[in-house]
Image (cartoon, rainbow, N blue to C red; front, side):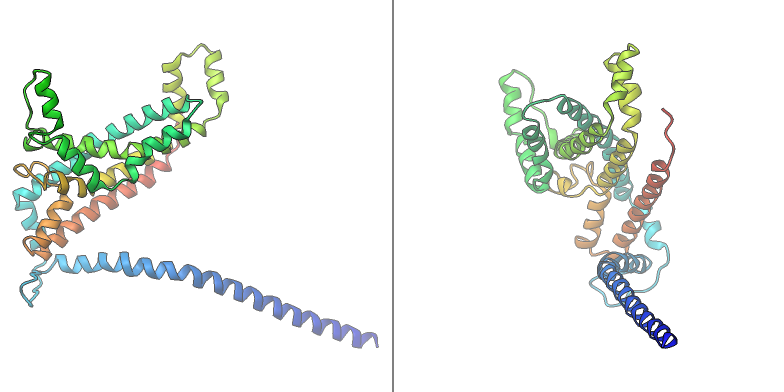
Length: 310
């Protein structure tokens, strides 16, 4: 009788174990299948087009012709011989060099001011964040209207007795005015991430610095900036990638002019593909831009994993 009870208990234990394992298998199957859906979507909409663009970049791909012969790296060589493409690279890096430090500085300054606001803090954050969620085309057209030859700003200058400016019609001024427009629109995002970073800094560090006699500037330099380093690096890398992909504001405000002084890499890709129907050259330019962004992403991982010395 005892032996029978032992065998029955062992059999029940095996049955319970098999049921438990089946539940475990079902759970993992559910997890992996759920993760597979967005992964398949990502591969279909991101990775496959990237690989396809590599294939197009090494072919003479003309939409008006059915033949697509293999030409190797001829498209890449032709791009670097093209003055407009070389100019677009220079213009894009001007956007990056002016826009990224500018929006970080302005966003951090506003965040520092908002961090000391006691009343209506949510209202101020909302007001500054609204431009970021506004359509880039709408913002660009408003600034284009302000900066027109007979626009509001020139009328104001005339009323003040000053000479009117060419603004977007000037090869020297246009690129910086578009950069200022992008900075204005992105201030809300920069402000938000810096406010979040400032709120994460323990107050005891500022109290300790004040006890040591540190003024406002020294507290900012030796406490705020070092502790905000990960946020600053994140903001810089995201900003660089964003400015490398500048397109909507440039197309809406100047369409690359005057004299290609505001043509960016992405706008040049658009012109090559849909104006000149040179899909091979456009894909080659896309590959170059992809490699630039990939290099910056790898740099991001390296910098963010770096140990900061305070």
